[in-house]
Length: 222
Image (tube, rainbow, N blue to C red; front, side, top):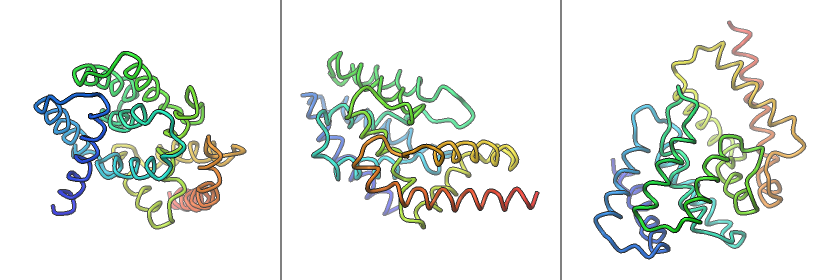
């Protein structure tokens, strides 16, 4: 509980900073929206797409902050990109974008920011296709950076994602996950931007190779 409280407190500080970019000082709207976001990212069926995932995204974006031209767009894309998440559905990105549009309007975001955030959220449905510009690609890479995390963190990510797909049997998981990983590993590069490719790609390929071997072993036991 203490760790979770610390995570929420850290995110609240970031939320206040981000909302100030919009010039919104309506404490009731700002507070209620933050609480609703925390509730969404704390749903019981989530194991990876949680408040910890949000923290990792912000850590990554802040680490590469000098590369970012439009920090408000990336900040609010981060807050809302997985706000609606149900592994059984295929419209999570669209639903998340709808909620972002509505809540950013209430927070006073202008039309251009809302539009760019929505476009970026929709782009997370297919990371390899990229976004509209370099800022978008930085965000997509930050969301994908877990692939290049240290191996113990990657293993925990795999366990968490599998738990989110507990409704899928092993055969379907092997097929879907294996297809996803093979598509990524077959590409000439994993990340959109040079800075992420240089920093994370080598470890990402090692992690993916390990997981594909593990999936093959699981398939052989079926």
